[in-house]
Length: 261
Image (cartoon, rainbow, N blue to C red; front, top):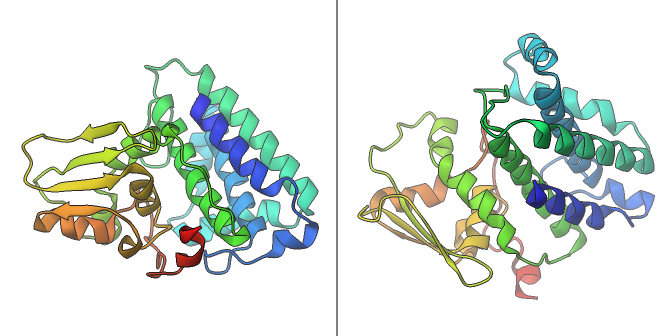
């Protein structure tokens, strides 16, 4: 919960001082401005707060949702996009604060209803962290800001490892039976390991790069991640830590100038 709040404050810092016209800047996500990014986060945190504090209302809402993923995303955004920037910013702050308090109030062993299956509150909080990290990167890239890595990304690393099969599901591909081994170096220099130690299929490299890959904000060609084994090699092409369509991702070298700073 502390990491979730800290990541939210960092994204807030990116947009708090923007001029009104900057909210209309196009981000690397096709068709999305900075306002779209914050509207999406506001909608996401509103739903998470409802799931934690009002599970019956959440379940009723989910029952009304059609199967159109993109349509549902657009509908959620529309409730915030007509707001002027200062109102959108305050609404996002309120949704974020409400969700943080609601999730923190759920006992750790109690499940929270969610879109596919119920989740422990800690996992739901980490999903929120993933959203903040990915959309925050889009905003940072738009503004030419290079973010400072911290070890709190361990939560996102663990989440991406837990969801290692999402990339296969998004493409209707069979999930391999062989589990991957992940050996990733934290910003502090500590090595984080996940998966069977004797697996012949391995992913190694910086944990920050791993997070950028998992949220599809950098092309694998621009990251210092290495694969051992055919399955691991393919996984680097399809990795994603979220459900739904993969999207086009980012192009090789798209942020080369920013990343060299």
